[in-house]
Amino acid sequence: MTDPLSGQPHRLIEGRSLFEVTDRPLSVDDLVNAVLTGGDGAVVTFVGTVRDNNDGRSVVALEYEAYAGMAEAEMERIGVEMISKHSLHNIAMRHRTGKLAVGEISVIIAASSPHRAEAFAACSEALDMLKATVPVWKKEYFEDGEVWVGQGAG
Amino acid sequence: MTDPLSGQPHRLIEGRSLFEVTDRPLSVDDLVNAVLTGGDGAVVTFVGTVRDNNDGRSVVALEYEAYAGMAEAEMERIGVEMISKHSLHNIAMRHRTGKLAVGEISVIIAASSPHRAEAFAACSEALDMLKATVPVWKKEYFEDGEVWVGQGAG
Amino acid sequence: MKVKVLLFASLREVVGSSQSAVELEPGASVGDVWARMISLYPRLAPHTGTVAFALNSAYTNPHEALHEGDEVAFLPPVSGG
Amino acid sequence: MKVKVLLFASLREVVGSSQSAVELEPGASVGDVWARMISLYPRLAPHTGTVAFALNSAYTNPHEALHEGDEVAFLPPVSGG
Image 1 (cartoon, rainbow over the protein chains, first blue to last red):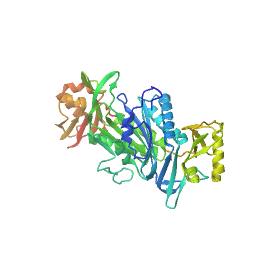
Image 2: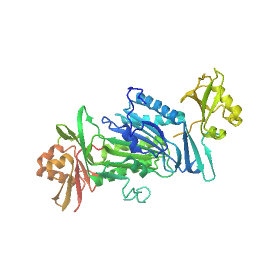
Image 3: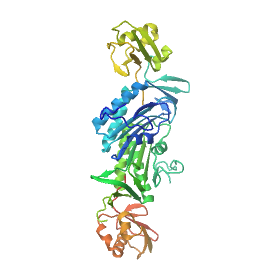
Image 4: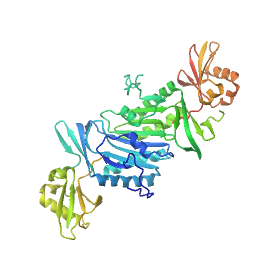
């Protein structure tokens, strides 16, 4: 995978891309290290976790399913747009799949920038775009059942 | 140390407070875990790192000195204000002291909130307040000298 | 021609499998594949209108023409984050 | 009465030590301690105007009256983050 901006290969962290879907637990430190270069002074991260409730109903676990290849391509497309729009140094996005317990991390976005405000804006906007277009699906598990979120007919 | 809002002891992480000055390396995952409770879905963090340059001059290292007890009390005061102003679930701030190499983390702020925008705003505002009032001092090391930042007469 | 079909989440559960293949006439479109899937699995029909289409890992529209070996995916409304 | 004095960063380097103690008349203020320090270490004088004062780990003003055992700290402009 190459960087659409520079034509250079993405910097890899332990052989992993900046835009990744994985069934392994996510580490914020990993992703911060992934976007840090010597010129950065600031990294902003958004960390999404599994809540114990939704719409007043008690949630015991979440399961995430992804179209992994397309999800990584979509995250990269969003990342490239954020870098160009917000003058970021770098951005990384990682989404977890599989069954997650309450409190576990489902998604991390990390943005490094010389301008702190831009990094905050990019993290927030990237999350909005991820929720809108990246092919990942969430199933909520309750004490007495389970449901795919927002897929009424299912 | 007790929580000025609830009168309850701060939740401790491995015996450490939510507002801490330490000479040990900082971990973003540690601080995210510190502010997470089951009801949270989102944590926003700001991570400050040592840049390899400042004002066009090449920086080889930074040294941070703190009035530790007062710095922790000031960070807690800021944190309590942020919780109340931005309806956060929780906030934690940790600042490192000692000599840091380029790329090392000097400060982390983590805010959890049911409302993402509030967590972003709280992180940014807490950093501004930290920079303005928390008694920590930074010395820049160059190839050919060193200087305390913003202490002209020194 | 033969194309690969991927289904996810609730669509996958309706069909009972995440992956299948269909044989189509040359010139068939992404929408034709969806019609074929509905004829095979009528319980997919209520998803028409909310399903999104992808061709070879990128969003596309139902009129897009297919070629031998293409990978077509049917996506329920996404809910990541 | 005796109070503890803390100095940080460039102020500490001027004095050569981060901690000392001074003997003062009862009723002396935080500003009096600073004046005493300048008399002992004239190279501190240029910092008047930028130095901030803390009493027992909280910001204070130079008029604040002291008590036996108080901890007074002189803070150059902070630069954390």
